[in-house]
Amino acid sequence: RLPLRTRARPLADVYTAPPAARRTVDLAFILGQFGVRFHFLTRTLGANPAYTHEAFYQPTLDKDTQRVNGLFDAAAKHNIVIQRRSMSPDEMRELVRPHDKLVMALVDRRLLYRASTSTVSSIVESVLSHCFAGGGYVGHYVLITGFDDARQGYVIKDPGGASETCVVDRDDL
Image (tube, rainbow, N blue to C red; front, side, top):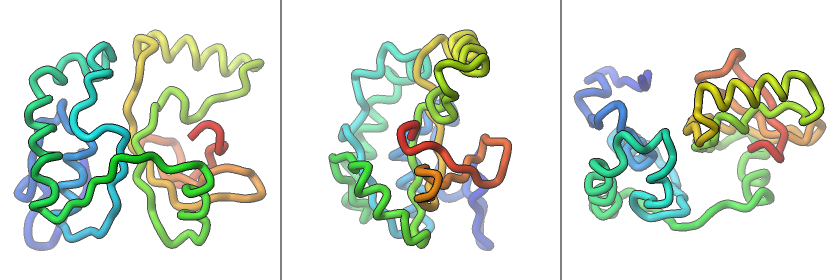
């Protein structure tokens, strides 16, 4: 559930999408409704058919493809600019280094807090990942707020994490 609200009306009055089918493009429309200026970068314009075999997407992807593709098609009419491209690690570091910009990123939750491959915690994490996620993709949004040069990691705020702010190794993001 997204905590975004205005004084005038709750989020649900602005834009709704089926909870089990929310995609990044839905978030772009929500941000647009609130007048947030942003850049939307994506590897695929529209629903990605490569995800049809991922457990996370299987329940809704077939039914949701038309709706998602329609949102991508309508984005320009709503002043939402979508670019088909990725950001290099150097671009990402430079973008967030001044700590005056936020990057909302969709990440694979299983890979976000990877431990060393030689530790007991990494073995436990791997087993839990396969038990609870079927070993497949687990979509998760985080805010990237900066880059910590000393620790060589991104400063993130994770709404599903244990602490307010943490640093994730640059190779794990």
